[in-house]
Length: 75
Image 1 (tube, rainbow, N blue to C red):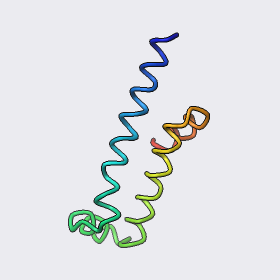
Image 2: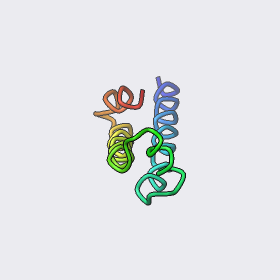
Image 3: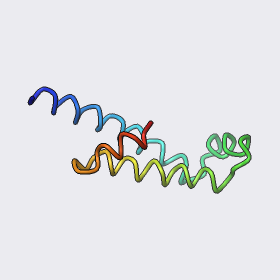
């Protein structure tokens, strides 16, 4: 049981860290991020929207009561 909790926490933390690391590029309008979302035709609203979505997902992953919602949103 304890091993399962450690694995679960480690995986959720890893996913949250990856999402949080990418927020810098989305929220600061990094040229690569702007280029990607421009090619998709959703710049700037898509870039900011995805950033907010990833931030919310990261927070939900780190809160034990909302981890299932966070896991589903991360998919």
